[in-house]
Image (tube, rainbow, N blue to C red; front, side):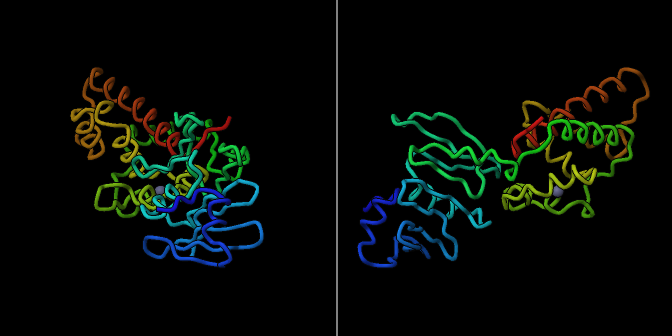
Length: 257
Ligand SMILES: [Zn+2]
């Protein structure tokens, strides 16, 4: 099978043609202009090669398995895109194939001729968020949970937080959309489902069955402290929930001070 991972290979494959189909459904290669060739999946140029050796990766908002597969098949060989709990990441490999670093995938990712990620990905238009704002938001959320003023998760919540796909992944993660999370912080909107999602995402090793049961009973108003010991456990659980919320954001955004 023909390997196409850069402009030179794409150019050789196209020859004098303006466009050619590629293996797989709805996939083709097309010349955009004298120095640009793109791999198109449906209506999106998922990989665009420049004659200078750089490449642009873009999902067009379609974070599907096939889009990811096309990027990994036709994208520069120094980068691998993969998914963990609904979050897309990109790993950059060195000449010897060893992983050098991993960061969040974002649309408009530019891979330089040397196979590195362009520094422009750190520009403010990317998914960056203020560390301080996340900390404040997490504190407010936990305070409301402790006070008993935070409702239990319900259909009135943000749907990207509340709804889940068949595998149990929150809709926001399943569709790769994290803007709603940034908006919740901006609006100071304490979403009950977000707290729950953060606890689940933090893993079973961090929150045991006992912890989760306690959190659910507290939410249902069934576990009110009648002694200092229980009150202490609840407060301690609140601190750990706060850490879980911060971790939840740190896996989806890059923190800036
Ligand atoms: Zn949400």
